[in-house]
Image 1: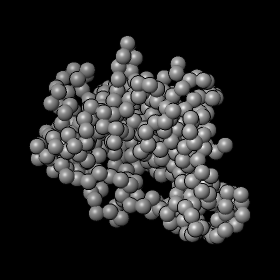
Image 2: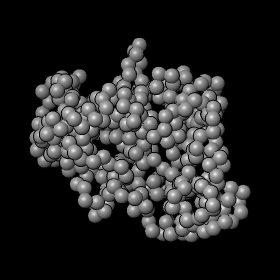
Image 3: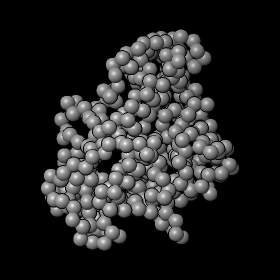
Length: 374
């Protein structure tokens, strides 16, 4: 991402109260509010603990017609008003399209499975937006409703897994630059989702029972394919086995991801999974579970949070998707912007475009990067 590029961020007038700080800078914090229960309780907790809280919501491009949900975080403004804190929208339409949507489309075109939520955190929320808030409001601290922990020990700051392991979102945050961690506040790291819901119900917040967002925000919370041009998803090609023999026909490589089993459109008499996607030949290859499991995983575009622990021979714990627990692995190679690990046991379907995130024995993130093909 070009740091000096003009991303055309625009601060919109507040719907309700304006920002008028009443406390010193060390007690001022901006909360990124999506309009969901997690960010709403984050704002509430910080206010209760004596922070001067400002609510910030990104106004993004979105297929609003594809969803019955409120567009562009409108709920966030109303919750902020309920909590009696000022709230502003930042229009990030151009930046979001350039940094998130277009690379998302390009990745699928190239046979990869992108993770736009990681990119949004790394390049928008915890980079462009944070810097914009500093310039416009003079606020140094940023908070979100992510389930993860910021841990301080011996003068150093680390990013760690949350108490509620079933909701841990640290995987999505690995891209934050290390120098920003000291200004990051994650109040929900020590709470469970049930505790958050209960607190919202006690406060009678309007979003207390709001369901969680499970799909892409810019696809109107619908299937990711709605964000792809039809010409991308309808280009048919061959299905092969893992040895390259044709066994069927697919309906467009962007409809598939590594590890997919359902909806492939081929019945082989035994469970078969997408094991390879080749955008050059426009083919997908199916294999058994054993054929799509690997021990060695490589990643590039690496962000390192604990440099002294990313070394060849170091035993760590790795995740290749957000919902799995970290599994034992060993670092077998590192470079200026890449790393390779070997897992103790073969892991299912490491997917190019997704993320490899490494943790140490204390559940702190050591490094993370984008999984690449061998």
